Image (cartoon, rainbow, N blue to C red):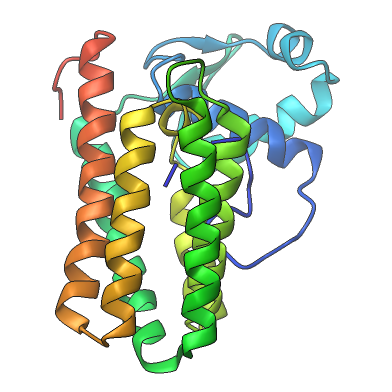
Length: 236
């Protein structure tokens, strides 16, 4: 899972996001990673200045996030980050994991060996990105892009664009930059992908299901641990 603020991440779409989409994605990542906490106000002028944009896309982004329940409107004061806790994190990844399992099982039935060879090449690119960052500052953009491309291709092989769209919609709540900056996560993702590809080659549906769920369960645990470390506690 998990980095730069791509609104199409997790789907097969190459649509160029609007500026308000990018601002919304940035704010989602800030909220889900704990940079913005429940009760914090999101100021239009400050946010626009920080991101180098006008107030208009920030206002549009906040309206979108209000519709998603991530922020609340306070009369005469603006927008405040809505309450959320570890239970919400678990729900987000539970949903992603179940949709991802269905997509992966469809890949079992539909992918050819050449398709799986392509997945292996993409995972090697992720492995190279992670390896090059070992011992120094992680190359967040490169790792995140490689992870995105791998899962975009995996989802494409399911030939279920609507289901992939639903996964992408759920995945918008994932703070990708947080994960891409964690070399331990990157190394685990590479190994998990290798096992998943091996299971796809042998058409082992149980192994495909288990590996997919394990990847999302690990992501949920890492995020909950991070939020607790930065002072969110374990509130549900």
